Image 1 (tube, rainbow, N blue to C red):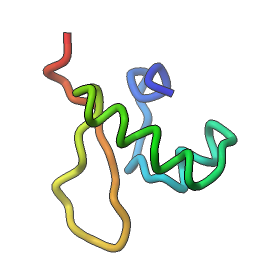
Image 2: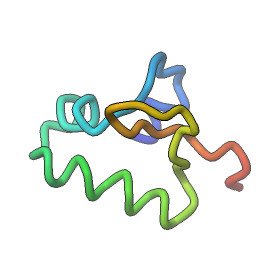
Image 3: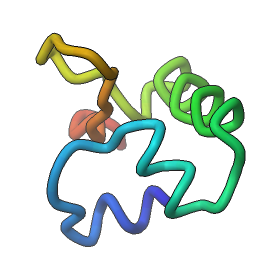
Image 4: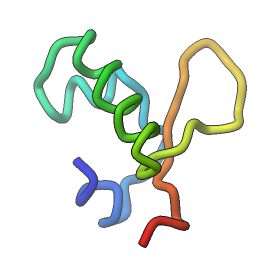
Length: 61
């Protein structure tokens, strides 16, 4: 999934998109990005709205 983001994923990465791309349950699609946020790989988007979205943390590495 991270490779897809590096390779020019367009749009917001939401839990719904995560579940569809990785073919996991909605619960897992919520846990996985949150785990990557805790590890500093993803960051939560600043835009507020109905659903949370995520972006790559460009400061990693």
